[in-house]
Every structure is written in structure tokens, then in C-alpha cells.
Amino acid sequence: MAKRILILGSCVSRDILNYDKNKSLELVNYYARSSLASLISKPCVNQEILGAIDSKFQRRMVENDMKKSFWTEVKIKSFDVLLLDFIDERFHLVCNADGSFCTYSSEYKQAIQNLGIPTPKLLNQYGKKKFELWCKGFAKLITILKESNKLEKLYINKVFWVNNLKTISDEVLQNANEFLNKMYQKASEYIAANHLITYPQELLWSDPRHVWGGGAFHYNEKLYEYGLEKIVGIQE
Image (tube, rainbow, N blue to C red):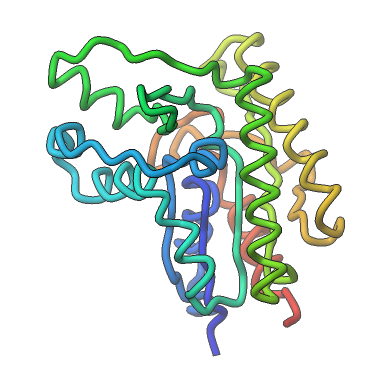
């Protein structure tokens, strides 16, 4: 029977399923373009912005972030593995007038540009306040999982940005990976070490032939196959 997997993260986790030739995994749902620091706030749905996003997938991702739909899903849905990765924590947060936050994803940014809306007030992607909100979001997730007896189902896809293709500056690489490392360290206070899926250093490189193009978090088929093997091998 296939393992049912719920993903909160990015293509680094979702793309693993593209290598699942034996259909060992069944995707319950995929939440992308959403920061845990955003999810901790109250809902903040903006229909005007959603209406300016043409892609159904992209619109659904932004809407889920606005509605904070993930919390309901993780409470009521049945799954064997909840896979998180923190790549989409690279985004700033939009500070709304009512005190709520949204993830300032590329889709959100493009939508407001299309509408001619000025750049909103933003919370820095790697700032102290953002990290504090992220910690609250992660703690909320842990509490929900404990209350629903699902904590043992949580796994973190522990990857870092890479720059073998020189697509970003050394400063951008360092800032991203330092923030990732802070989140991994905090997560390790809540979950066992074997619930962090780690990769050999030799697998951390970007393939220029990647379907989404070469980039700092677009890896290679060996890494995705390794991640798949780890997830399929999880003992319930």
C-alpha cells in the first residue's frame, strides 16, 4: 500500500514524487509558496490579488497561504508522512494593515505589479522578527501534531542552497543557508534526529538540465532518488 504524504514546502520535496516509479507514495496535498511565519497569523484573503493570478495552481497556493488552510488540513486529513522543507522561507512577508501576514511569493509580487499596486510594507525574509514568527508557527505545528497523535509522522527535508552554477552571489547563498541552519537547529529541539532527512554532501549540486532550470534549490536526480528512498523506507 502506498504511503500517503502531505507536503508543506517547495519543489525540492514535491519533485521527489516524480521519481516514484513504483507508486510507493500517494500525494494527499501540496502546500507551497507559504511560510510558517505567515501561517501563524490570522487569515487575510485578498480577492483582487487572487484574481490577478492566471495560473490555477499558483492562485491556489497563494489563496491557501492567505486562508492559512494548512492548519485544517493537518488536523483532519489522514496521512502517513508530513514532509516539510524550508526553502520557501526565502520570501519576505507582507505586513497587512490588520496585523496579518502573507508570504510575499513571486506569484503574489507579480499579481500586485499587474494591478499597479505599490510594493507593500514588508518584513525582511531573514530578519529577527521573521524568525520569531517562524518559531511560533513551528511550535504551533508541533502542538497540533501532538494533540492529534501525528507527531511521529513529521519529517523534515533538510537541504541547503547550492551555487555550483554560479546563479547567485556568495552573500545570497550565505544568508539563505544561515537562516536555513537556524530553522533546522530549532526544529531539532522538537523532533528526533532520524526525522531529519539529510543528504551526503556530494549530492548537493544543481543540475543545469533540471526541469525548472538550474538554480540554488533545483538539484539533481540522484538527490531526489535518495530522498525518495529515505521516505519510502520510513517505518510506520
